[in-house]
Image (cartoon, rainbow, N blue to C red; front, side):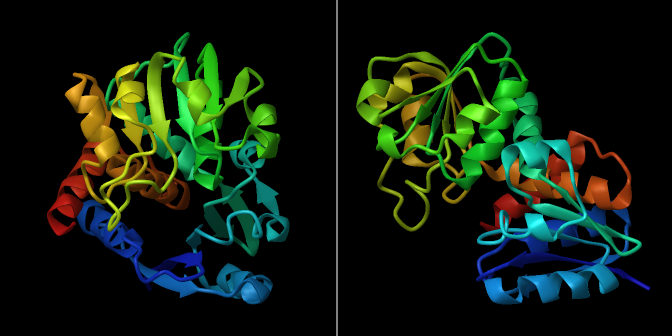
Length: 272
């Protein structure tokens, strides 16, 4: 009998998760079915109980990454520190929460040979996606981390618990800075509004590498600016696939190399 997996969230029509996980099953020979599990916030407790009885695991997306946490039996250290869960494993009636965005971001940087220890990084945006990114950068020993937000007075202080060395700056203050890595965690430049970048070319040129969590379009204006400056530019598709494979590693209790991630990513690129 096939094990059941799925994506737990609000509106899920746009999700690539089913394609990614079905490709995982096809390439690894594992058997499984991956479903979209649209759930309203008020129905979340009941839905989780149902999944705990019938499913082997699920991913979690907006708006449930934080709300699901009090409903879980155990939470992995990285997810607890980040303050968000995006993967749940169900074992013998017990729900265990993880954050694979953390591992997906890390594997993306490693694959693209982007060094972190002792380096200076800046993260654009302080929403949910930025939490895992900031936690990973802090854990890997960046020497300075700038958290860029429009209004520093309204910044989420939880980020300084995740990364004590971090400093909030606004976009104007960012102009005076330079560093090794610039990460876009905002939706600016995402399809269909592709003629926009969260920063201008001058700021992009001041950082040695740029990473955009956006994967559609594959080359955002933000990444085009980095390339024009002769710098490394990486989109978010590898991370998207890597966090899904990391979830499967948890569910299957197996490890998979980057070759599988790249294979799935290349297949997706043809579909986007």
